[in-house]
Length: 217
Image 1 (cartoon, rainbow, N blue to C red):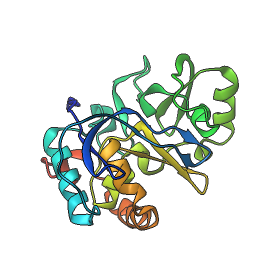
Image 2: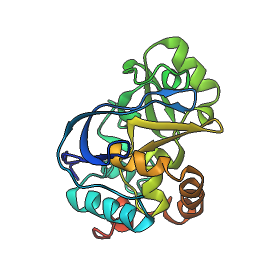
Image 3: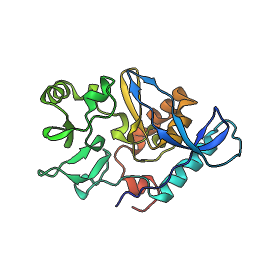
């Protein structure tokens, strides 16, 4: 299936107004930076985001097609990989960005196909040979949780795309999120959401994106 882009409106709790976001959070050793609103789109105040609001947001994302379905070689969809593959047929994870750079607080650093390491049938790109070798020494120290799917999506039983732009490291583990609005919702209840995701993942780990998201078999 083809991933479709859509305009995401997120909330700025500090201003109680609906806003689009210009600057995205940067991950620095597990610390989240602020998000700067680009422009105000409305004047309606918002309250606390409750779980039903989160579910509505997730449902809208599914309907809009903001999820990824792997190539046929990855029919079980255990990993969130790009539509394209390497020349050897592996799907590319983390949108081709360097996971070691992310773990070291450098934010999003594009990887290169020259520095590719395949782990569990999935390809990871790195910006340097050194980073590739660090990853190869212990991949589990770097790979995103839940196969790179949105952690909040997993918390409500869905497999949604996870963007490197919206990431958090908790207890040495990397979690990624669908978009700015979902990321903000997660920050309101990190412990609760991660606990729900951990509970749900075993049930959906080996199930296809289409079936998990209610889009077919």
